[in-house]
Length: 575
Image 1 (tube, rainbow, N blue to C red):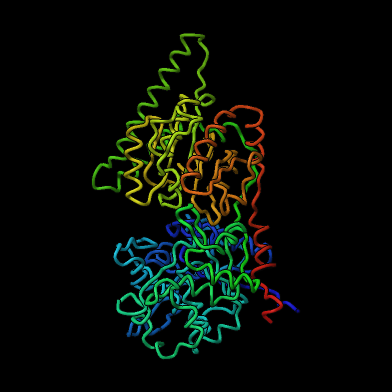
Image 2: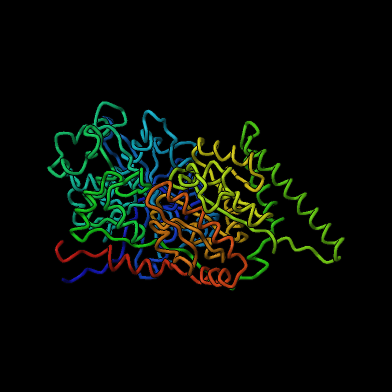
């Protein structure tokens, strides 16, 4: 088989951290870092994404074209803006440095894409994904129309990311007027299979029939095996569309690519194919499911002790500043922020008292940084991230000292108190308000738990730099970036052995791993592993694992080469 050289690809995505304000999760990191990595392989990687009502204006971008589409029974005009990919997202593109690969970003603008500067809508429990599904259906129609009408350049590969863009694959595969797009190979990347964008087929203003009435009697046979959710016969499933109708499906780690081929079993704490395992297994049998781990950006500067260990007092100061910024945007004082500020005040008084006592004893300078164990965690407050921590805990015969703990998190905190009396667990995250309430109650009861309810990039970086041990007990983790960032800063990790965590951390070598056959067993294993790892702190074994963690490299340059070899080429049986 003769392979055509790939010169230009189009990444279609909802997020992009190359632009300020367009990041929510790990997808944004990929869309930020993949284009320059592909550029090193002489491939131009352009990005198409919604404007969200502010990006083009923020970067003072010139209007490129208007595209007219029929959507929801009406004629709509979607404006398209084009900008060179900036080197620095915080600089305006006309005054800052531009990407030297020639990569472009196409911003699609329409009132339906504008949600007060937010990428996603929270939506309501009775109509999940309603607003988002509508806007991404219109966005996908606009992108497909631009490609068919050649308003965008010619691309060798069309690369779609998550359910938000999957209807491009649907139009390409099911509607005759977009069939020309089938000449362009289509890759579909799944960043998180748990979010699928499921909506009714009809009977709602956020439904397939309402969005595309003009195609209802024109869908080809492929629609019968790709549009509908296998569990709900009157619902469409965009994630399924992307899986069935793309040429190749990419999962963001090899382990996750294997896990999704099996059905989920929530009782056992296993998250697999989430109802789409049969479609994925069929694709895998064709050789068209590929697992490639995401990369991380490294500058490979030597770790400086001063930079790496920013200091406990400095970390508390950074956390206080973050809370003040959050409060500046709030109408009322947050109870969670009040608890956190009170705890930090207590910590500061304790440090001062210890410092004074040390001066009285030997008149030498007190170095608290070398005595303070910091357990850290950074991530979204979702069941995916904290389900194991919030499980009920039952003390074993081996360790009855934790008998007062009601949850796995409380058992972890009691273990930390016993083995590292001055230790603190700092958790930074926002998301599910119910989870936040549970963590709030725990933070009020345990003085060694500092829950910082929000997100702040500078604070997260300082947690990576200053922590002793990073905890990532995800129930499933397609790839994960936090563990890579912690290791990059020289902080070893304790993780659940699933997905990308399993692929990036080797137990007792570059970090520590726990497992379990059920949710209860996973919680028990986590507590036992915490006890074991805390007992190692400061030992030669600890230092070696820490050293190994800092040496790990998951380079985007290597990842880009795998994309070209495994994703952006056709199989022999596809020819």
